[in-house]
Amino acid sequence: MSSVKFPMRLDKFLGHATELSRELARRAIRSKRVLVNGDVVKSASLSIAADDSVMLDGGVVTIPGPRYFMLHKPEGYVCATADGDYPTVLDLMGDEGVDLTIAGRLDKDTTGLVLLSDDGQWIHSVISPRRECMKTYIADLDGPIDDAIVQRFAQGFSLRNEVKPTKPAVLKPIAGPRVEVSIGEGRYHQVRRMFAACGRYVEQLHRVRIGGITLDASLAPGEYRELSPDEVKGVAS
Ligand code: URA
Image (tube, rainbow, N blue to C red; front, side, top):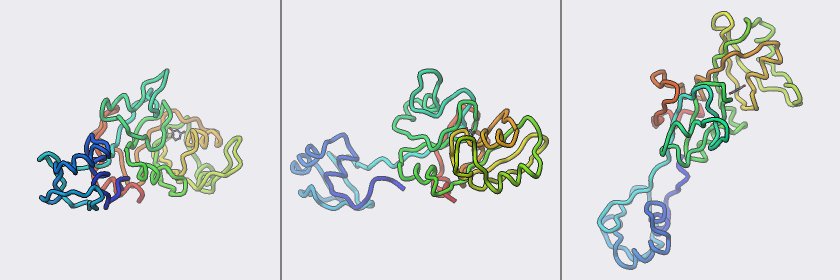
């Protein structure tokens, strides 16, 4: 899933794995400061595989892997890298948030699961409309739903000022005005607008699942954790 691809040239590897520019990496190689699998190497173009051991000045060097996180977004935070008016979800992560991309936005007032990573391909697999990665929300409405609304969601319909109908969505009653809704798209304010089109107002919206990843119940609003390798692989399921 990483955007770093093996095999790669030794000077490129050093450029990714250390602070050295490619030119300085070449100089280090010429000065015999670089060992590959225990041997001094002289060629900057040597092909490095993922399981090769590379040392510089006696220390092992590795390319930092991509990072993947889930975060429990609290109300009042925006999903943006910076905002003039409101705190952002990246503010909750301090230095760990540097260079991360948010996989699909939640509205300021929506709470729940947000995924973040510095792996562009993985982010794409989560948000690409073609992949139709399902997102599941719990919505508290201003009134109960009936079968007609469930059918409309299942069949798809045109939202205000949009021609293209929504893709089939799964709407299930939980209790009273609380429902679960799953959609495979990510249009602007989509869940709120779908309910509005059916005469219902969303009082609270909380995302609980994206693809195969469920919000960890032990994360309080504002907390985050790294994804497990299985979660990283399972997101598109
Ligand atoms: N749909 C919405 O209306 N809001 C969100 O935050 C996410 C989906």
